[in-house]
Length: 153
Ligand code: 4NP
Image 1: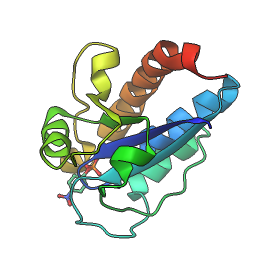
Image 2 (image 1 turned 180 degrees about the vertical axis):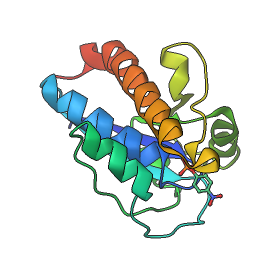
Image 3 (image 1 turned 180 degrees about the horizontal axis):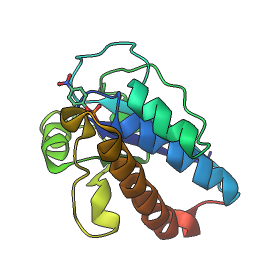
Image 4 (image 1 turned 30 degrees about the vertical axis):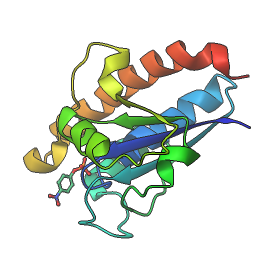
């Protein structure tokens, strides 16, 4: 079975669908067989498409992106090998709702690089914030794939 990763932010319309799309593209480019999805700790945007600025920056860098926002559910903690939180608040939220039978490794995504959270571009709502988010997600993708590549074909 391919290794599986769930990227998690708050609303599941900015950081995590962007991160999901970048991991999928970069893993494919490296020939790594990884299943990727994303979800939110909140349910504020059920079934929404990624935010338009998220789509814009992904289009700019030729990153295919298609996602329908959803909230994290208990089954995610068994379905995925890794659950990567975009920031420390969402990591705390993920840890607080973790079911007893969880098997996933739940970590701050930034812990694979420098321990930093991804700033939420939603609040700035400008192109520069989404560009910064893209660059941060790309660095974290490289760090994460480097760390786990020994475990996937
Ligand atoms: P995200 O950004 O967590 O990166 O998807 C946000 C999107 C929406 C909201 C907050 C953050 N909101 O409060 O609606």
